[in-house]
Image 1 (tube, rainbow, N blue to C red):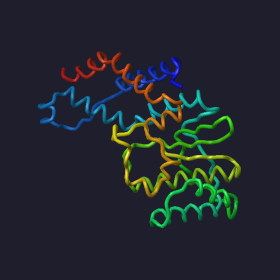
Image 2: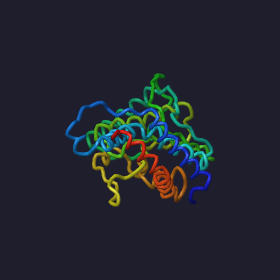
Image 3: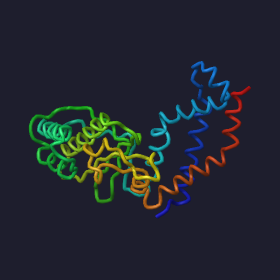
Image 4: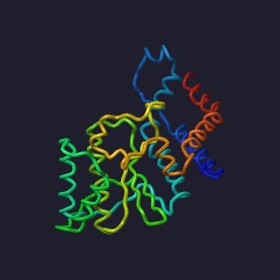
Length: 259
């Protein structure tokens, strides 16, 4: 179902707060670019620098809080920057390494359901090893106790990054099952938009490393999973409305750089 008015207001207020805080503390990069400034103007160069700066933390300052807010309405529980368990069995580590080797060598195709069950079978066997897994950007728990660990990522990672992502997803499974071997857990990568729209998301680099049906949610699929059907379109509408409402405020801020 579409987002409620309450949810839309929360999203819009969050966007306004983030932008205004950024305006209050933002200082453009000091790189001297006389030809660019002469051609485009200081305001446009400041805007370019601002967008680049905003992009570097868009995920943590905007996307992550919005996803957490939406998840709180649809799921029983939600947490951002969640710390999973820190203990893993030596046998589970061996299974993870074997899975990674097979995928990297192209000997097997990714199959997350089978991979989870392989880890589950040995999740408490062997020595107990303490590790420090990556924090979970968004943890959601459904009413039936199922866990969803989501890593929110840039939509254009390279192959080397996907290898790291895959290992992280498998380690989250292993440390969780070490504590409770019976829990239903799904670990996945979430991408907030599709840079190839209107064409389908197409990154050949991920096909051999991620189970695309079980480990990847992009754009509409991601937002509708977190917030319910129709959430993606409603969120885009919220961004557009805030942009229209703050247009004069934004223009005035960057016009100051020409003075």
